[in-house]
Image 1: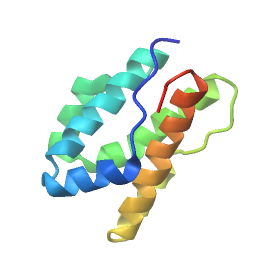
Image 2 (image 1 turned 180 degrees about the vertical axis):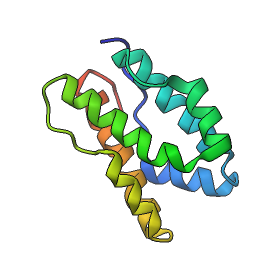
Image 3 (image 1 turned 90 degrees about the horizontal axis):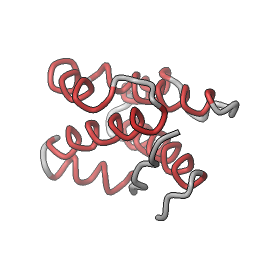
Length: 118
């Protein structure tokens, strides 16, 4: 396993994404996919995720939790999130909040378990 990623507050990510009209979300998407790739050696990485985010962003709503779940599974742990969690985004606002909390929460727990500091 490579370096651990950054622990982020899911509500802060959501609010910054709203305030910046989605620009922070693209930055966050790039960073979390990059961190996943550097840590696990698996996945699409930041640049490809950014391109997907710019062209057909809805794909990342399913792909990110799938990659997080795969990272957990590679360590023999139960997947806290899977690609199907992307369906939460069908519920306006509350679904997006739930998605961010579940996805960033799963990332935060993994980073903390591997020595990241909050």
